[in-house]
Length: 236
Image (tube, rainbow, N blue to C red; front, top):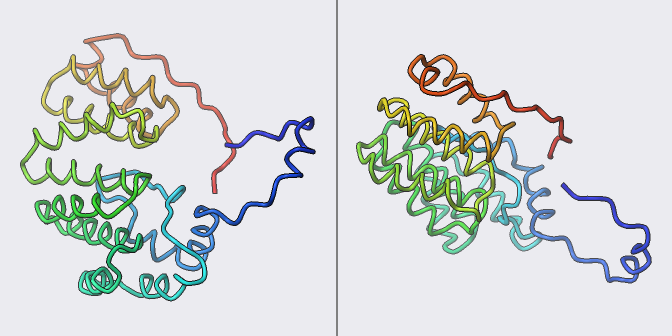
């Protein structure tokens, strides 16, 4: 993601003071300790985005005890107790997101959408905040509030401030909704948007396969050119 430094600027860079570890580096320390437990609860249920990068959840030193208490919280009751004991802490927002995921996994879609809404207010802008918004949209759709959920997905798909994976998943969900409703023109529109937005993403690959296997969509327009798969360095 970063580019090599220009050698001509190396002297100027060397003269600059060394920055203190940023939130991302601090989070990496936390993730090494608790990543498996966090991932188990934060992997998307119907919301496929896995977005650990960029989340500013952990503050070194003073927050180490809070991080350990968060990692030890496993049940919904324990998570709720953690939130009550640590109001305003960023890990409380992540705990709320876990509660929402659990409600969705249990088929309690109305409860899940409400829990995701609460998580949105507790999480900063970024990957986990976007996860909460995707979850809230999908929860509404699963709870029978399709118009509200679809409107939320459209806002996410059109929001240039969101990361491409977030917009890609929202667009894919809109494609599947349109396809399921037999709205071929609309489905094709979302498919084309997705191919332009994130042509090498898993969402684009799924859309390409679904479009090819659906006779009504295949007949409605020419099959799009398969995206070129580019090998990029693995992000860690």
